[in-house]
Image (cartoon, rainbow, N blue to C red; front, side):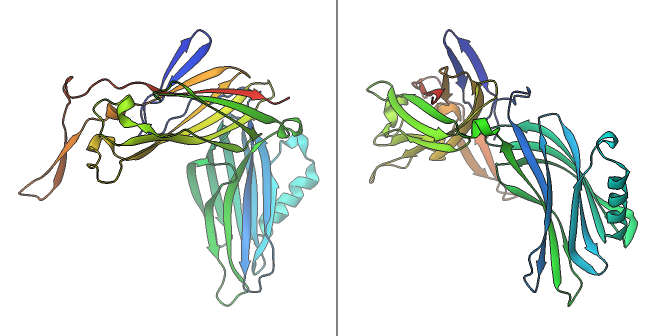
Length: 350
């Protein structure tokens, strides 16, 4: 489920309203923002367990495109692999082109990957991939693919698989792509200090403080509160607990990329009625990506519980099809909910 995001400016405090299950702010595409290292790998599997494989990588800023290349097979051995990155003609000499031509001519399979970077955020990398595999057995009929891929840092995505000949030592080769957010050496040692304030408890804002190294997550948790504190028509005895994770990266310009994941868990005590349908699922989460200046506070407004109206289910007596009908609430049946929010402030530890 996707919804829209509201961004409201106010004096000294930026406010973001989280109104869907999963949301993120738009990508930052300036040169001072993060860049990613993307690698394509080819990994053989042999019956003899002999190690092998190759990988080629390059660094990307959002908007950049580059070509990476792989080969598999030399003669009858599929598990012999090779890699190279395509470079502008001015950057390489004739010897490099001769070597590439020999690699392609001798290989059983050649892959070309055109990688276009769309977004680099502190918790994910979004890229477009155009690829083709040219096989010696069918040189005029290449296999082609086009994908938009979202990768979490360190996560890989399988692109292709080729099985070896029967009774050969080489059982298969697997081609995949993997990405990491790239940090300059001076930024890798940074530590972030976080302050969080949860608004919604009866006693007023609740503060939590934590630290996290550059590019790593830090966990936070607030104590449970009664549902009826924020939702007057909520079930008696039910509680809400908000917890989650923060991940941040200091950029070259000194600003901080932030990824906030907040999880809200609703539960009822034993021997209490079941939660109303519009309180389900009992656990939901939201994600927000944004950029802040050190010391700047950002307020994240969590969605009200009654943002989704109740529904009725009906089974068609003729077709047996089960249909869902939304039941609008009247103003009297849906009391106004109090605001729940998390305010985040990040600073770089000196």
